[in-house]
Image (cartoon, rainbow, N blue to C red; front, side, top):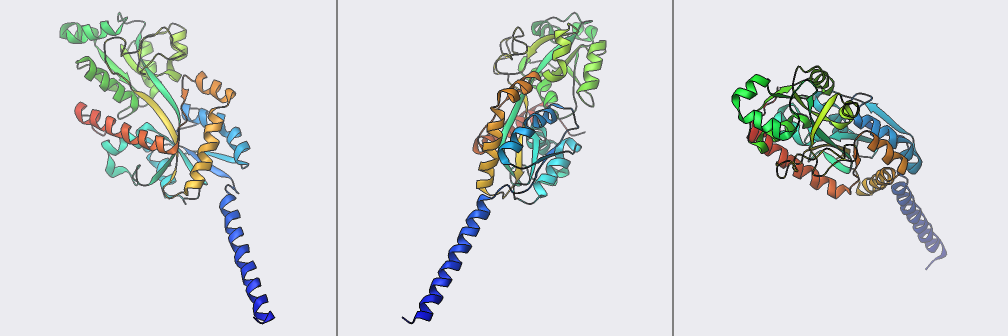
Length: 332
């Protein structure tokens, strides 16, 4: 073989090897720019507080700034819609709650510009938030048994103005209230408020005798004796209210309904990028200081694999869709 041809072949091999190494380096370079996380709730809410507690830990692990953007509205559809339409490169993520992933598709699919299953890539569940059934101090109701007994006696129910307030149509608190009716075999009137705050205000004032609230919104009021905690909606008792029995313990067999939120990316995000993100979030959620901050809210860290989170979303969607149909819940 002529020397010039041999040299040309060697040069070609060197160029090819360099290109291959460059491609490998590029694949391994993620992330090489700031990562934006869209939170579908206003600042100060549980999801916002949790992601901000994780922010410095994520930045340290991923070695890039983590930019948090609050984009609330339309039950999460606006913020998560932006995530679904973003480039699938791992630089735009979203904090998605149960409502936008498993409730909105059953209530008003036409209003959604994306499909939660097809257009998003689950990264990890972040946290779960149990709910608590409370009564006002003005109410004579002191237990779940009292609620059910009054509800089954129409005269007493009318006299007590029996009703349950919750944080809004189609919210997890609404579905928890509907599940209570279903499991207890009663038909208590459910009153939708525009958010947890007004529902809390009205039950405090005695304008509504009962309410289903999330623990972050109610734990201080319960601790101060301003609200009576009747039962928690989780499968087991929660650390913040260890003396309050679950609804399942009080005769509502199999009762479990909690709020939750997790991290999603646009569909098509490379598996290696999802794996890197998952590892960073799981590590952050295992940090003792972060765990303490999350539990101080009344929430519980719940890191998962991407595959487990995907299965969880699907199972929750089936469960919530069935309840929506059976309870006759409609979009506003």
